[in-house]
Length: 493
Ligand code: 6PG
Image (cartoon, rainbow, N blue to C red; front, top):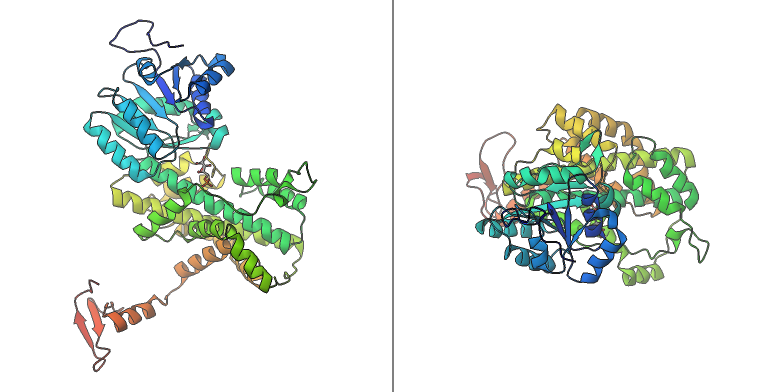
């Protein structure tokens, strides 16, 4: 099956494939097929277990794959400079494949990791491979199986030089939104995987807000599942238009063959996760960025999975009756709360990108990130166009919530948002995404925050000092003496 010999046969140019894919599970296979379908690409494929390779090649003769039976075969089938995209499960598997390729690749060759790797690993791998003269590019790829096949949104990091070779190949397979391919060189080393991690964090928040909307429409609005599917389908024709809203309507329309019930009612209500949402929160906490919307989404999945605790509490506490609302105005209120909370989630996600870029020395263009999220990825939405415009108006925007368009849009929905949060609380329907987003908004809008009191408490028990609103410097009150104030040095503990 090996086809390592190049048409011109030369050792100088290597094999005939301009790109290779390692790891042929669904994402890898689909990406390989996508690559093969674009003019000018010849794609080498290799998988640890050869059966998968054989199956892919047999099922897709049109792709003209160069199938390799061994890693040596695979490397020999690549034209120089060699470029291979790894699509294996993040973690130890990725390191193993990198080691195999790196042992055979030569300076100037490029290894791309298209999995959901932790950006810290990507930074390490890039450094190690650069020392050996190899380019390593961590590329976030979003869009699920369909996206990989038809056009994902791609977030590559790595060197600008590697992107010169890789960029055109990635642009050829990426989704296209408003005439532009959804790929950009996000920044050096781990920047691409960092931005993909934040993408996933926003995805978690978006999904949680949609799930809360569904729960409220059902338990307070009194709609049945089919009616809620229609509500989401209608919302998808307005400014909430997005992939996640669209598929929500599809999921809700699905009837279970076995029981005749809506499928959503027979799925166990414990949400899983593979970890990228947790990474987003862990990193944001370390960077001091409040990503409360993403945090609530991660925690809500965790709460859902605490089935023993849920059962124990339900045995002793009875749920309260929902406050009844007129279905139509309630629907509008939920829509407004969803929109406003979504703005908060994106604002927090972009804040985390800014903080990450500062911490790791990346030059990330926020407008470009919003641009490549408009198509192909899971969080693609009409809304992203407004974010692109906001950063075009002001690339140094302090927060999306300070942009004129978004400030106005959120203010317009504010009363509805408050009604939804209070109705949810009065009805005993958990809406952590909506309420924490509103609390965050209210914190940003407040002239004074009770953080002043916290500073006073810290100074009382730990001499942690505080600053005054009316004088420069740092102060401490002698709490256990005469309670006079002294100017002092900032506390280091
Ligand atoms: C994407 C998705 C993809 C994956 C998520 C699922 O952008 O294509 O985000 O990466 O489906 O990682 O994450 P959880 O299993 O953690 O929900």
